[in-house]
Image (tube, rainbow, N blue to C red):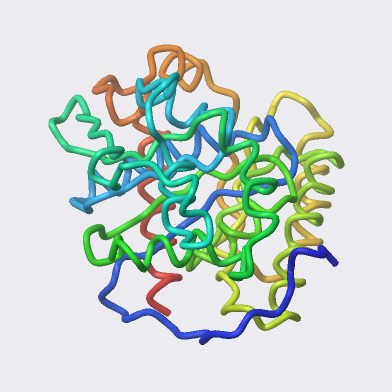
Length: 291
């Protein structure tokens, strides 16, 4: 069990059914497509008419880059999180969320807001090491402090491929988690590791744990004979949770990512299958969060 999971005082309240939902994409293993899935999922929600905010909680900032924003010397989510902690007043910057939020306009004219990341976020755990406030609830309380749930229908978080304090903050702040994975034993172990953190949070009673919204098999190579049996073997270990239709390593995915576009930015028929997959995922996630 992680030593930063000290038991705080506070409630484990459930949010109003009509408030915005916070969804994270997580896996301790890198290279499984978390950022790709988060980017396209955000677009799928926007195409459903939802007001979407994306939070980049990975210091690598790949999520921000897909939206065309590079942090460089600009303010980003790290500064806002630090600003929300009274004990770190000496480190506060004169910046508010509306100063940091970037607005991205899709090819269809819809808007998606983004709170970008930056390299400073890699020092988050060290920066907050000495505070008395519960460190694992910093992101949750930031979202509550600025009433972000009331301003957006959906908040999509891209998390880092680690098991540190950032991950615990994300899990404590969100309503549900999607778990992208590549059907192999390394990615399977990454899933087990991140699910163990969820169990640790549940045992500590620090807040309500996020709902498992399903597993997303990605980079599935249907040409490889072993791929199907590998996926079935992993599926058997996942219990009764939703397992979405596998995403194959399609050329269209690579093309859209290279152009920093979502699959919804293309009108050609070759993107219809991918668009349908993400639309079905949004429908499933929405239904799971209502139940």
